[in-house]
Image (tube, rainbow, N blue to C red; front, side):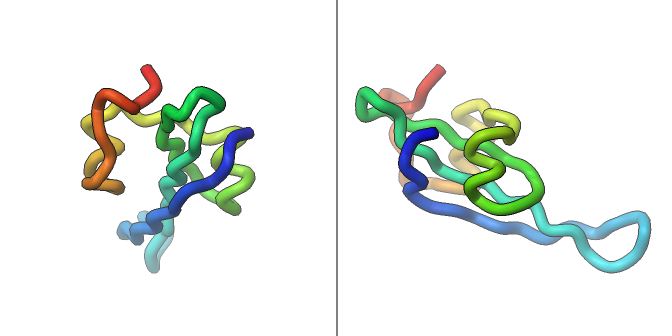
Length: 72
């Protein structure tokens, strides 16, 4: 797992009532690139087991990221 650079948590309505929180984790790669993973749990868990987002989806959570540095 790379270094966690940032996290972004958003809450959404849940069918079971209340709200569910989903977390996006910005992770640095070994060659200076980065990727964003999303899931439920701790940032460490999401960085290792989360679903990788496309660049366009990742920009919604981290608007300052650059496409040329985003891991494909």
